[in-house]
Image (cartoon, rainbow, N blue to C red; front, top):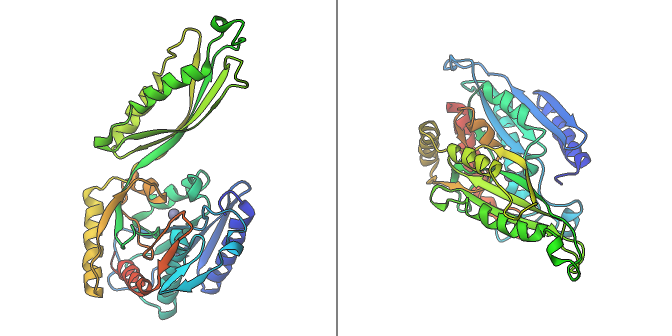
Amino acid sequence: MTRVAAATTAIAENLAEKLQADGVQVDTFTDARYGTNVRARYPLENSSESASDNKQLLIIGHIDTVWPMGTLAQRPFRIEDGRAYGPGIFDMKSGVGLAVFVLRTFKKLGRATRRPVTLLLTCDEETGSHFSRELIEEEAHRSKAALVLEPPIPGGRVKTGRKGGGEFELLIKGRAAHAGNDPRGGISAITELAHQTLAINAMSDYDVGTTLNVGVVSGGVLCNVIAADARASIDMRYSVVAEGERILRAFAALKPVLDGAKVEIRGQINRPPLVRNPSIVKLFEHARELAGYIGFELGEGSVGGGSDGNFVAALGVPVLDGLGVDGDGAHAEHEHIIIDDIPRRAALLAALIETI
Ligand SMILES: [Zn+2]
């Protein structure tokens, strides 16, 4: 439902109504292109062990999915062999549900938390959070830590590292000419694109986690015309902050190989990396201990994809990501969650809310 603003707005309004009925302060933020974000503030219930730093605990999720409208009708929700299937259930409707139900339980029981809790549900995570980023960062500044309800790594491990990245567009100008009558009179933008593709591939450094992928190319009009234009879309990922700067410098320094060709690069780094630093390790160790009390082993891992947690971690706020329900098939047709995992993830989330 990503890219359909009306759809995420409908979900957001439905959620906002339910949260309001729980007696929580709810605000919504709407953009005509992206849809609606929901923010719910859970005030501090009376606690003798309140944190003294006036910081909140931030819980983050997203309500958009990668699936086009109508997918739910083709693949409706179903339960089979202890698994629940449905578009967006793993990434990350079940995580949103988990957070809402756990916080509702705190509210109903008047259960104490050490700090106020803010739940932030964004509507454009799958397309890079262009609309939500500002709100995420604003809330991050007020936060002691953030818990992200994105799906875990299949098998249940939480995510303590994520790559950052960006999307770029390479635009090449050559000069058209008749391929038969005047082959030397043209400048092939496609040949230039081939040179540039090799140069961009060479910027990858797998040892430190930097990868570049020229993923889509187009150019030319007819095979008997030397191509005047060509373009490429490039996906860039990196794990180390300095690598992002290196790639931006390398892009800026791209020079045409063919005489008379022009090369232009557009785009930017969209998400900084979520770097596994000591404060994130400490948060993970805390969660692992709590999981041990609950009765399961919590593992960790790093992944190549980014999330809204990346924005928070880049501001120096510790993030524990991948706290959603275990399953598999994010962005794939076999997307599902494991039903038996729901209670223990809920217990872990509750224990984290109570102790951070
Ligand atoms: Zn997600």
